[in-house]
Image 1 (cartoon, helix red, strand yellow):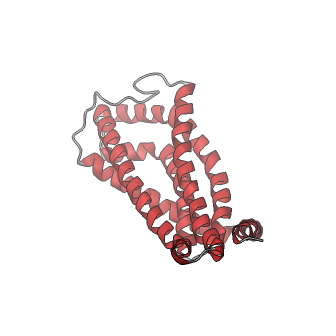
Image 2 (tube, one colour):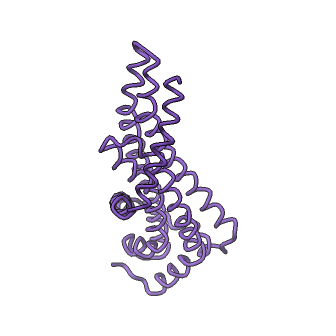
Image 3 (spheres, helix red, strand yellow):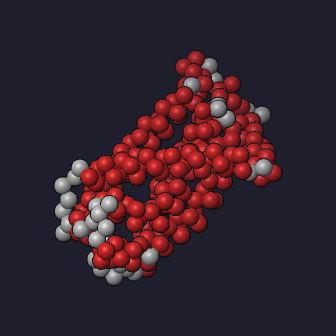
Length: 237
């Protein structure tokens, strides 16, 4: 059997064994994933608040379905589409880490010289790439969300902090779900447990999908009512 074929077979065996182990005792690993995802979520929300408080707002430029115009099913669908793309990107980072850290070193046995070195060092390169991509993602999301929060808070005549608190019912499950695969990736890669990453992809994505559906429903049909209530009470804390 060639090394590439052995890597695939071993990879599926490792994934099956990991899922069985987690299924027997899920809470230790799930707790670590949840804490990691919450940490990233809190970081992004803090950066969003910083951007929102330092941005020149344009209250006329922001449109919010259900608030500035009626909300429709296609708005709900758009949220699922947008968040689905982000979840797919984060989940693929787990798959890439699995391939780079667990598959390529085994496949390297069939090669020599420069090609073998590339295979052997793929895990380190994967860590650097995903870390850079995560930082870039956090920065761009904080900038975009912060600008939107500044405009919406100005339109509602409330403080950015009050607005972010009002958005938490949908923002918290949404961001938690989106960053769950990256939390699993970070924890596994820090231990060198590359063989667990495919199992982590399946598990975290399965948890994230219903959370994103729930968050999109809240954002479309519940959050506008919360924002209207906030506007009428003019909270600026």
